[in-house]
Length: 464
Image 1 (cartoon, rainbow, N blue to C red):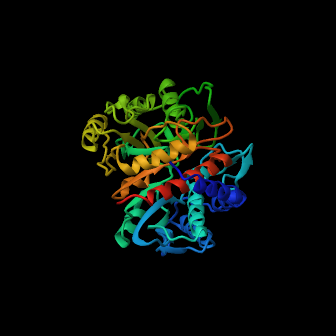
Image 2: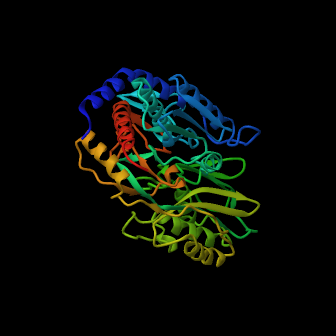
Image 3: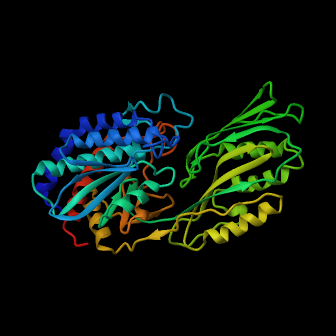
C-alpha cells in the first residue's frame, strides 16, 4: 500500500509545478534535435547536442549534479546513501518532422488540453517529468537509500550508440526504467532489424526519380516518383496527385504515416506508388519483377507477403514495413524495418529475402539487429511497479510486451514503464509518435509524474 501522506505530498507537488512543466516541455521541443552530420564534439549533429545541453541546463536549476558525457548522453543525479544507483532514461533526439503538420512542429500548440509538437510524447515530455521527479526528492531533504540518475540520450532514434558509449565509461545502474512506451510495465521487446532490398542495375528504366521516406522506423506518409513522359497513361487515383513537369510525369502519394512498430491504421505512401505503377504498366519489363516483389511487401504488414511472418504466442506477430526508398544510377534500394518475435531470427529471414531478390537480379546484404528480450513478470521489481500503477490508477492491469525498441534492452536490468496509457485512443486531432500532430495531454503528463515519483520511491525499498 502506498503511504497516504507521501502520496498527498506528491499530488501537491504535481499541482504546484504543472505550469512550469508545460513550459519546460515547450522549451525543450523548440530545440530541433533531428540527427545531423557528425562533427567534432557533436557525435549526432548539432541538434541532439543542443537538446542535450538544454535538458541538462533545465535539470541543473533544481540543485542537482549534472554531467555531460561527451555529448553522447547526459545525466542529472541526486546522491543517495549508496553509490549504486537507480535510473530513468529518456531520449532528447527526435525523428524528422515529416509531413502533414498543421503548424510548425517545433512550436508546441495547446489544443483542448493537449500539447502538439514533434517530441512531445516521444520522448521530451517524459524527460521533463523525470527532471521534476528529481526536484521532488531534492525538496524532501532526505537522502534516499540509492542514488538516482535521470539519463538523457541523444541517439535513440538512429542507433542507441549513446548508451553503449555511456556504459563504456560509467558504471551501469542496478535497475533502469525508460518512460518511452505505454503504461503499465513493458517486460519484453521484439527483436529489431532493418534490411536493404537492392534491385539489379536497370539499363532500361521508365523512372527518372523515386524518393520516399524519412527514416527506417517511420512509415512514410508522402512518396514521390517521376516517370518519363510517354511511357503510358496516368489515370486519376485517390490519394495520388499527377503533375506534368519538365522531367516527366510526377506522382505524389499521400498516405497515413506512423511508427514502424505499430502499422495498424497507417497507409504506406510508398506502397501506393508501387501499386499504381504496376496496375498501370508504368514500370519497364526489366524493372517490373523487382517492383512485383515490393508489392508483396507492401500488401501486408506482417511479413507474409515475402514469407517471413512469425508468431510465437508470447509477443504480437512479426511486423515488416518499407520505410525508405532510394533510386540512383539505375539501382533501387528499398529499406525495410522488421520487429520480430522469438521463433525467427535474422539468419532465417535473410535467407528467405535473399533468395527472392537474387532471383530477380538483386541482392540483400546481411545486417545486424537487436534480439528480443523478456523479463519474467513475476520479478519483484516488475511487481512493485505494477502494484504502484494499479493502486494509483485503480486499475487491474498486467505487464505487456511490445514491438517497439527502447533503451531498456541495452542495460543489464531494465524495463519500459509509461508514460502513455496502454491502448488509449487519441482524439482525431492528435497524432502518435513519429506521426504528424504528435501529442500528449497535459492531464496525462501530470498523472504520469505522480506514478513515476511514487514508483521510484517504492523501488528504493528493494534489494538489487
